[in-house]
Length: 584
Image 1 (cartoon, one colour):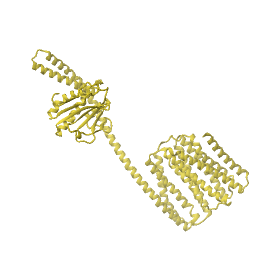
Image 2: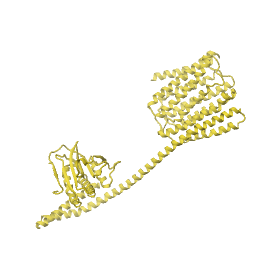
Image 3: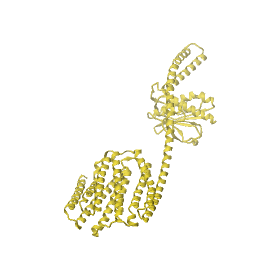
């Protein structure tokens, strides 16, 4: 690769020195003309090939970069085409190029794709929607440049042929176009960073040299001192060699340090396109009121202005349509962001409330533990005393309820984060039976029976029994309350072991065919959040144990499924059990 670049630069230097030697030492004549045209053609042919190769290599990169090199290649191709038409007259036909020359339009238009390449702004990052509007703005500007040539130059070629006016107006339009290219390059070189700034700087230097040398050459043509291969072609050749060398310089530049688009650049593009559109009416008015030009030229310019108004007006209409779509999109995004912000604010407020509630629960639980300890001690004393058997049974029940209350208080402390979570291998069937015994009075009051189907040989899970008891009580109570409201007769609870996972189902006691599929995992932090705070707390507890809580996707039957990873292989210690509500 390095050897190829060295060969390329050596070739450019050789062609440049060949042009210098020919212009300084060869006499004016056919040989000098042919030598100068061949050197210029070789430079432009190599430049077009280099830009095309850069375009091909940029296909796998960002779209803006690829489009930039493609438009630059088009500009070089038009420049080469113009040189080919020039060679047709001077090299093949051995005659001077006619003046006015119809091929001058190709020379004028070869800068148009290059200006469009600057409009792509490859050094900036922008979304596709911005890109469509930006490219439409520059399509308006390119259409305006074509109109300028048709308005200023074409009439003196076709409507009223005038060689002197043609040369003057063409040079003025071409100089204006080159100045626009240089201003654009200077603005981009000032705003860009890193490798892109150096690239724009190289193009700016080459463009400035070409603009100044071509201006001097046009001056020489006007004074009848220019001829192909003259000393005026030396700076032109240098500028062409500089432009051709730019693609070979880019591998040494870091062109990946693009930055976010600045609104100011897009604003100026919109302003320029608006100025270009409004200038059409002024130019039509100027053509109508300018009595210094022939009537056919005035009518031609008025017609060209009106036609350009129609074309550019249609572009503006389409641009407004895109802007309307863009505005609707951003309004929708703003509304969605506002709703999310409100939801986040409500969530933060609720989190603060829960944090305060957790502190309150923790403090209250500590205070409740003190009288509970005293009550438990007194109940044990009464149970150990010589009271009658009936009173001892009542004291034992009091102690059982006190111990149950202490378990619930311990769960509250754990839930509030004020008691350590103790993970240990536990038997889910045993915890589930305890929860059913605690739920039995509440469900019996609602007329709901409980049917258990405990899986045999259920492996143990690594969990905190108090927290799982809290989850089981809540899930069973929630499903039971919905069953009571919907006149179902029984709550069905089952456990089983599948795919290294212990599954616990809470649902209505219905035929197997009516059991809904559990395909909707709940998440305490995410899109599918539980509908209530208590259920969200249960979901968080299950997730902290490495499991998940599921609900049916679409079902009228209230149901939940809890899945926990097994801690060990089945122990075969738990027999199969199935029981009704009574007996717990």
